[in-house]
Image (cartoon, rainbow, N blue to C red; front, side, top):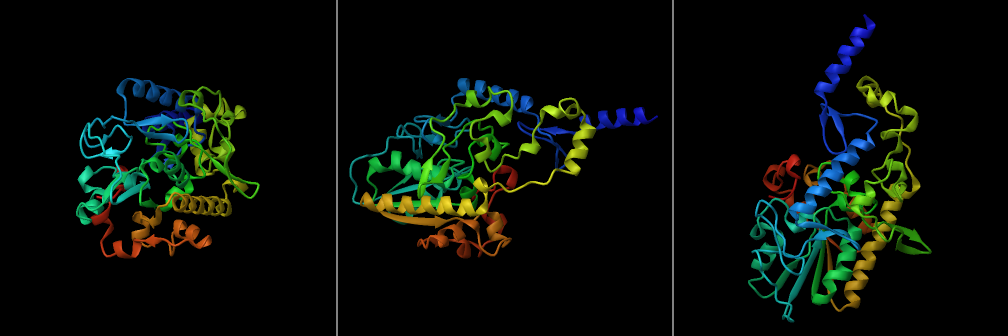
Length: 356
C-alpha cells in the first residue's frame, strides 16, 4: 500500500512540475536539487539556435555580451546600428563627426529601452527635450551590471568623445556586478554567457577571470561546480545543485519536494557578501567618474527605480547606499517617479518589469 501511494505521488508530481531552462517548479516552489545535465542540454540547444537566428545580443570577449552591429530583434522593435548602438531605424548610421553637444548613455535594459520602441526610450525623450541641440547616443545593453557599464564606457563610448556621460542604473545592477554566469542571474532569459568579475586586490579592483570562457565552454563541463570562478557568482548555491552522493535520490520528485520544503541553510560567502558588493561597486563608480573627467567629459550618475522602489518596500535602495558609501554626487529620480503608480510606470513582472 505504501509503495502504491509513493508511486502515485511520484507520478502526480512529475505531471505538475513546470520546467524552465535551469529550474523546475511546483507552483511557486523551486525544486532542489537543480539538475545540471538538463540545464546543459537546454542551453546547448539555445546556443545552436542562436548560431542560426543571429540575435541582436551577441557574445563579447571583453564585456561578456553586447549588441550585435547591424542586427535587429525578430519582432522588429529593436534596431542596432553599425556602431553597436540602438538606433531608431534599420541601417541607420550615426554621425561620428564632432558635435556642439554629444551625450552618451550607459546602462542596462532600462536605458536600452526593453519592450518599447526607440522613440519611447528615455534617451529619445531626452534628445527631444533638448530640441536637437545635443546628439544623444544610447549605449545601454540588456542585463548589464555596473561593472559592464564601466567597461563599455572605456572601450565603446570613449571614441565618440562625449561631452556628457550619463550612467543610469537600477539597484539590481549592483548585485549583477557580483556574478559570473548569466544563466544563473537570468534563469528565464536564455542568456548563456559568462561575464567579467571584478575583485578587490592590492588596494583596487581588477578583473580576475580573463579570458572569459565561451558559452559552449560553460556548458561543456560535467558538473556546475567545475565551472571556473563559480564560487564568485552570487547566485551560485552549491547545495541547490545535484551532488554525486544524491545521484539516485535526485531522480525522485518526492525526494526533491522534501529537499525543497526543508532546504539546507545557506551561508553567506565573504566574496559575495553585501559588504564586498558595496566595496566593489563603490570603487567602480569612482573609476567611472574619474575616467570620464580625465577624458574631458562630465559624468552624471543616475539611480533609476524599479517597481520595488516605487512601492516603497525598502527605506533606501542598495544602489543609493553604494553611492553614499563613496560620497558620490548622484541623481535619484525615485521621489519624482513616486508621483505615479507602479502600473503607470512598469510593464508586468513576467514581461521584465521595465518602464512603459
